[in-house]
Image (tube, rainbow, N blue to C red; front, side):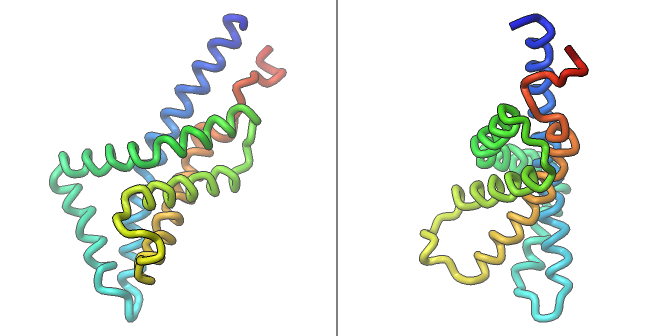
Length: 160
C-alpha cells in the first residue's frame, strides 16, 4: 500500500469518526424535537411530555448530558461501525442507505438497553422505537453529509 493510499484510508477513518460523533449528537437532539412535537398533539400520551423534560435536565446538568451522550455512543457504536465499514468497503454513497443504517443502528441500540423481552412490550414502547428510529434517520443523514458522500477506502481516480 502506497503512502497516498494510507493517507486516504486514515482520512476516511477520521471522517467516519467525526461523522459518527456529530451524528449521535444531532440524533439526540432529534429525539427531543420529535418528542416535543408529538407531545403537542391532541391525546398524546402523558409520558411524551416527560420525555421532553428529561433531555432539558441533561442541558442544565452537563455531566448528565455527557453521560447520555457516552451511553448512546456505547450502545450504538458496534452496529454503526459495521454499517460504516460496509459503506466504506463497497463505496456505498446513497443517502437513503445511510439513513436506513442510522435508523437500524438507533433501533438496535434501543433494544440493547430495553429491559423487557419484545413480546412483553406495551404498544407505547413500539412508538418509542419508531421515534428512536426516526432520530436515527436524521443521524444517518448527518453522517452521510459528513462522511458518507465520499465513502470508499479506495481512492477515486481523480486523486491518483
